[in-house]
Length: 117
Image 1 (spheres, one colour):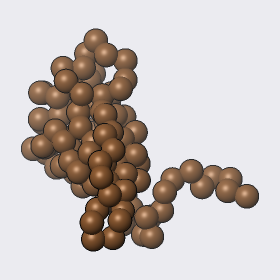
Image 2: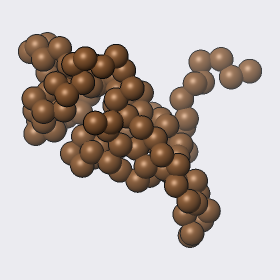
Image 3: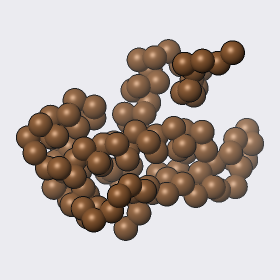
């Protein structure tokens, strides 16, 4: 039985997995769109959307919560001041996962995750 095993493991330990999600979210907020494997894109989506939901409030507490999860003040400032206000009237669904062709080298399923405008 797989009780309490909802997350994908990616063959990494817990701290490495958290660092992977953190770095994928940082790049997503920095560039607006990233290309990665389908599994990683699907896993980073709820993480990034939760951060946007928290940042939408714009309070000091929300900035600190987002800062604790992203650990990069430049991206936190961009997220709180530029990205989150664009989604004030939207109830979720801030990102979109688009499936792409398989990677030629190893046949991995690829996907692009982007912020919805």
